[in-house]
Each structure stands twice: as structure tokens, then as C-alpha cells.
Length: 341
View 1 (spheres, rainbow, N blue to C red):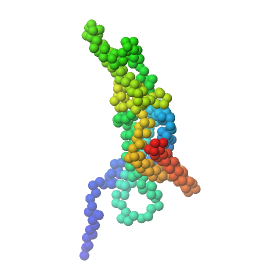
View 2 (view 1 turned 60 degrees about the vertical axis):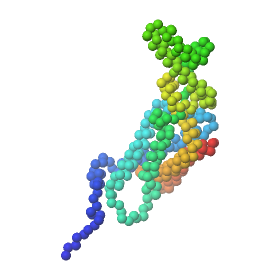
View 3 (view 1 turned 45 degrees about the vertical axis):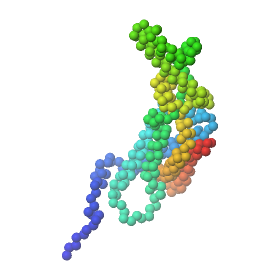
View 4 (view 1 turned 90 degrees about the horizontal axis):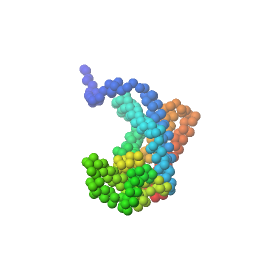
């Protein structure tokens, strides 16, 4: 008598053959991918400490002088701009290599164990992929709040140096208006009404209209300066005009491109962290970062072969301290700004 074996699992039809999927991926050994992840992650760990220290400048009661100077340097120095590209590339590569490593590991065992046994793996290791995804989502929100403003993809608040708005055209207009005992706006209206009487040819008329149009643009620049003085939107050292709107930034870029308005990160951070929902969001973000860093620090040493039984405990403790220090520095800025300190 022949018994025919039936098994539901045998009749299950996979849509993707895992062996074919693995063969289609570039041939890089798992340990090589882990080393890349560790090196890229180590670089990001160092950057986080630098970023956290820089953020502490927001807490200084100097009307943002230190933080503004820091942001100005970071936004205008060419070496820093190159580093910025390297940093973004590092983040993307870290994400790609981590996802690649996770995918190949999953495809290598498409059928999971029927009964999960006890594992000595640190709980943080099992959460690394998921905390990494959460960090990526939160990082996108963070970039939208700040970095994308710098790139001009999102509207924000801006600042500009006062001396860069004192153009020759603006100064000439002010002097001419003063000599004629008029306000700048009265002068422009007068020139518009009487331009035809001074022009004898169509060419001269076109030049006069262009000159008046340029003066009106300069009037927009002077109005920005006047509003800054009237509303007290000047930095403590009187060198920066703050709280510029997106439209004012666009006007300055068209009329006075040499002024090069910059994002007012100090003001934006102060305003952002007054919102309790944003404070809660960022605090949750920092908790997720702590969980990720808590395992990433000792894991990087282990992957790079810099760990052994003699000082593994010390590395683990140092990793915990490092994660706590960095995340508490970030959190302190958010909480203290929300409390008005």
C-alpha cells in the first residue's frame, strides 16, 4: 500500500525565488557589507556629537550671535560644503548597505523557524532595522524643517547682513530724494509721472522706464531695512536683519543678489521648539536615536574586530554613556527652549 504525503507548505507557491533574487544582487560578502555599515555608522556617530555640541549655542542668551556665526560659517565655507555632500552621501550609503544586508539575510532563509529558540543576541540588534527606518522618517521631517529651507525647497525665515543692502543705487536714491526734499517713494512717483517729459526718443524713454523700475526695486530693499528698524528685527550687534519672509528673500535675490540672504536657523529653532507637538515629536525621535546608538556603538567595534572579552564590557559601558550624552544634549536644547530658557 502506497501512502501519498500531502503538506500544505509543499503546495505553497512563492512569487519570488530567493535563490534567483540573491544571484541577481552584486557579489559582496556579508562581512564586507557589515564593515561598510560599521565604518559609515561610526562616522555618523561622531557627527552626532558635533551636531549636538553646536546646538548648545542656541541656549546662549546672546540673541543667537554664536549660533548665527556658526551657521554662517557652515553655510559659506567651501570645505564645509564638500563635507556636507559627504555627510549626505554617508547617510544614504549607510541606509543602502543596511537595507541590502538585511535583505540578503532574509532571502537566505525565506522559511522561518517554526519555533523560535532563545537567542543571546542583544535586543537592540533585533530592533536596529526598525529603529533605522524610524530615524530615516524623522530625519526627513528634520531636513524639511531646516535643511530643505537652506536649499530653497521649503519656505522659512531668513536673515541678511545690513551692510550688503547698502548698495550704490539705494544710497544714490536716498541722496537724490533728500536733495529734492522728498521721500524715496514720492521721488519714484514723481519720476514715473514726468519720465516722458525728459525723454526725447523712444530709446531714452525705455532707459528712463528701466531706471525708474530699478529705483522701485531699490525702494523694496530700503523698505525691508526700514521695517527691520521699526520692528526691532536686528541682531544684537546690528549686523543682521532677521525674520525675513520668503517673498523678501526672493526680492533681495533678484534686486541685490550680492546680499545672499541665509536661513535664520536660530529663529526657526526657537519658534519650532515652542510648539508642544514638535517638542514631543523630537523627544520621541531622540529616544529612537538612543536605542539605535546604544547597540550601534559596541556593534561597530565588534564588526571591525576591535573588541574582545577583556574590554568588551568597557566598550559597552562607554557606548551607553556616549548615547546618553549625545541624546541628552539634543533633548536639553528642545526642552529648555520650550520652557523659555
